[in-house]
Image (cartoon, rainbow, N blue to C red; front, side):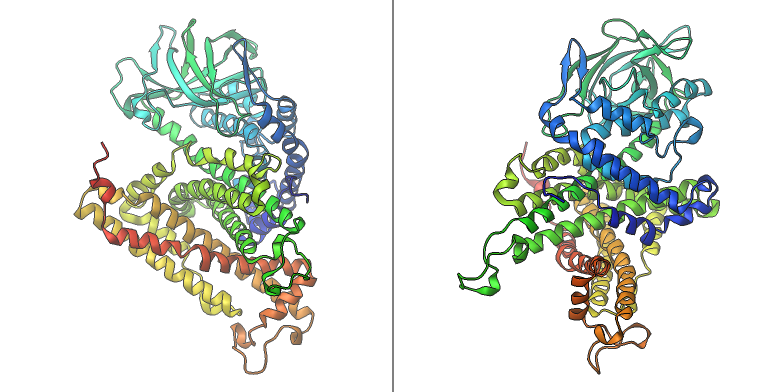
Length: 635
């Protein structure tokens, strides 16, 4: 690939889905019995081609053009409306939506392979599609039969858009403080009045209607979260024939001017200012927060996919550039100025950055895809296993959200560093990756909020049972099962890190009990990072174990003498001599499949020995019991 092109890492996505997670087993579940493993693979391959050909080519131009408010209506960049139409017609908006509402009904752990690519290719466009499908899912879950019939099919088909209206100018993350009012009419519906800000997809020209899900407080409702209800507020009220009818007085006051995702219409909306905005209650009064949290948790995982998509694009761009860019003499030639100049890929610092980018991306992919698989099993697996999988989803959602958001930004940052001066220009896509990805650690709950959710809720639920379930899930790695000594050492080092994480969690609980709630949550964000590192390394090591078997099988095909160590070498699993790493590397240089598997192993080792050690620093922070930031006079 060219270093300015976007491309999908089809091989790694397929490896994670079919080798690590074995998504073929999902076809044995009733919900997915109509699919075959080949169907799953075809969907991801076709999705990858679609985003490379349709979404990616307009990403950069959309960033430059941005969105505009013209005569009170949002105008999106050239090509975006057509791309939306093509995505809707191909069924990409409703990949995981229920078939009874027109969706494909795919497993999330399959669809995520396309979602990652769509976010990587054009996050500004796909965020609106994601929220539309999510809003339709919420109506499907809590709406009446009439509401479902009126809205779900239109939204999943992409004829109508959808948005999630939580934040207000004086109530961002503190959703319980919202002031938007809902007054019940004699006809049984409500009139909505208030202002909502930061509304992604709040207005656009993709669809003939937009369905807003609005949190509001009914007259006489108690203060705080318990007094909040959720309403369907369409831009145009459906007429008797089901088509958009009367204007519902939803006004776009302005568009936000953002650091990134500039082509995404982020709106400030006013409800009921120029007339009556009619709202239709979902299920019952006072249930808004619990209903919205269903969509919020789905959206948090979607944000993880967004960060992963950016990371995947950045690492492939940087790797391609490092192969192309010739500069400098490799350090091993010393001062021999007659030595041939080499691509920057030859220099140790660049190689270190590239493998760090690769490790962060592929570790995050393992974590995120596994969480999606657990979600599939929690909703559609055997009834006796659903609670276990739901526990895994619950504890890993804040971890995956933060890992995707933060690692996506870090990979883009490293990519700019690999490119050097040109990386700081807009001529290459890394700068846009960086700008577009920063929002991921802010919306759908900031990094700090995810840390609080993990520490104050998920680790304490049912007396710590969620954490206990997670520890049982990841307790099956055994260092002695590895034939490659370096991989065995990596597994042993990971096991030490896992044990230190467990003790750090216990120390955190002690801080809360002994010193108070502020001290107990002081390190919440750091501990969430530590969780992400341990879990990312876990999935990388599981991938490495699979890759080891595949690599050694390829090596055996060339004759044991080509890869086995010398007589008297370390004996590994099965009583066989440990393979010679140098000879395995030589095989990888000549064979593309061997190269993939060899690099899988080295990627896992790199994560464990070069990235995972930051967990020791986090453990030291917790053990220090120093809270200078709480004691400093910052008022």
